[in-house]
Image: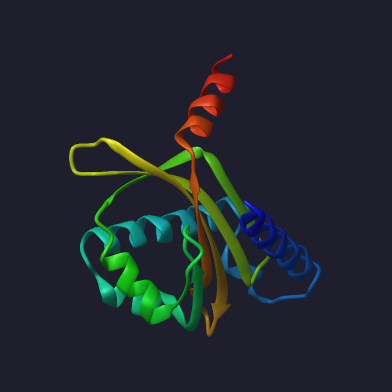
Length: 165
């Protein structure tokens, strides 16, 4: 949990710093809602790439010095992360919209979602909070880093109960 908190704090501080910077790249989205929709679509494309074993999608959308911290604390570079993602035994991802976090500052964006990941029969196996940092590079949005954290099913159940009350 400490790793997640430190990582999240670093991401938030980066966003706050960048949002105070002048940038000409804000013209790419008319609103934060439009930006969020774009990055959620990228997230869906990544899930498709995992399911279809599409390594080219990752090669095109991750920067060369991409870095990821897995839920087990392993640090992957781009090559290792692509290999890890394509070897995942669980391929069915459902984003839980009530747990989305998004920040956008013109040339930097952070998307954090909780995915319900299941096997082919639909049985829930794990919940994973996935936080991704994107940067506008040469007029293209690229994922520069990501981090995954396992979320206990009990937490999701408790949050759902509290929302129903």
